[in-house]
Image (tube, rainbow, N blue to C red; front, side, top):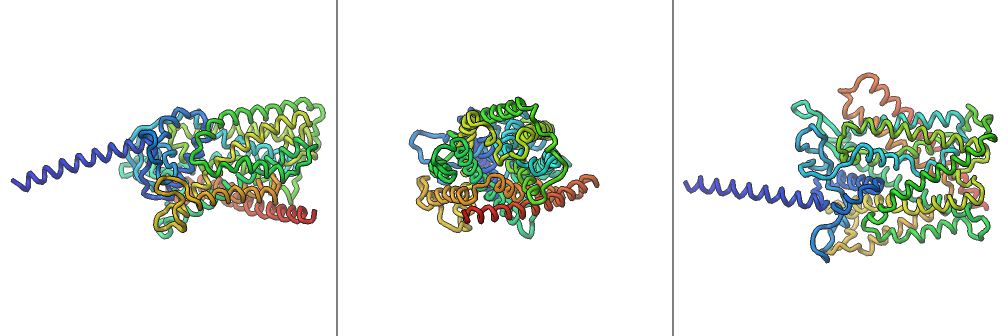
Length: 525
């Protein structure tokens, strides 16, 4: 009898404990915390969510309700350095699936959180692939002619396809034959492909590629800021390098950022301003339609410089990094494919028209940043808006790169290479601040010594853009789902992998040669 009574009391205590843990977990989930069983996957998902939050711009109510830490004023901040910024942890499984699905990053879902519609998801993707880097597309047409236009269409089709198959890698069939979401990030997919021999190798490769792309994006923002200011005020005795230094001085406070909420408020405004700028450029080009140089657009290509154009075009379509997080936050994940179709079709049409009419207007005089071709009065106004957008866009890739570095080098417990960047009170330590300042200075040094927007953009697109958008998604799709693929899907994946590899190597080699040549020229001058 005593044994039976003790057993019942134990069961009741266990039940109460489980309920309490569930309530506490739900409370922490609403606060934005997440219990991580795979730190690398969660770290990458966290950067995905940073990208998602910044690009969205329209969900400030969600940020205010979920991003603010709960508790009384004066409460101690989280030790991990503003981890509460992450939106509700790992994404929930799609509607129609089981309540829970165990993945690489732990258990998905159980708690409700605000979701976004397909239109809002499309706005995020549009922000990613319609950014200010489209300003380099007319320069790509200069060296590619009609083949450059074809490549804009081809890249849109391929990136749309690889985005879909990347999301397909997040799902698997369970014992009942239902398709459930078992992974939550690009890193989780990469780790699953390398398991069981090298369970973390794939994630490390993806993280390295992500860091390179994020840092190069920061460098490009500094380069384009110096370039635009120099060409806007040629009469001032200030060189392009000096303008880059001034821009970096403005950006130095980014080293003290703990979240991106303040910057996110400007996301929508900057995006709308950029669309207005594109419309102004196109309107000016249309006003000179009588002088368009159709005879300059040919089918021949510049063998040495066209591979650089490939990197520029590919880089302008990169969005795969944050697609897993985006799809996991959609109200209807089944609408993801349709959303990808119309966003990439719209991007293809707008990019093609923008690049073509701009090149027809200036032909062989087309510059690396197309706004530098505008007349002085218009150029100054347009470039000032673009500089403001570049400076406000810089904190996102910078903060995401810092998060990845801190997670991988400073915050992985016994596996950390260096002491933690944050103290017990949540404050940033001296070496953590030194790391951030060093990263800002590094972007400045690269911008000073290699101030070539198109070459850097081509190099980044060939190296990490092609890898993250072409090579890895097709490879992961073949590795994880090859038994369920039809013959034409296998053919597409293999063809994309081969073509992407050739374009990546060719573009990287030619971009690197161009940078070396440009560096030698600058050294001689």
